[in-house]
Length: 127
Image (tube, rainbow, N blue to C red):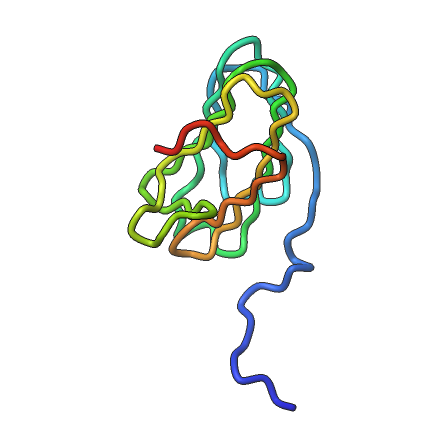
């Protein structure tokens, strides 16, 4: 049976390839950071700013909170799709407040980020 549409990115291209331990209050994530797990160990709230979504087609970014601080992932526009949200209520940021072990991932498709929640609780704040 012939495939009717072609994939632009195969899951095998979304390799997990390293860990960055975040020890400052903010970090800019670059498209070349795809597959890296960012671990927050900073003794305060940390904000990770995603790259422009157009530059993140087929890219995946992972975030883990290793401390009792806020883990904030933000985008430059309202283009983060969170479970239970509609296309018209896409978010510019997601926040886990004071939740050690909170983890999430975001996959870019070129027009939006798909938010993956890896813990039992939903983010505390959607912005």
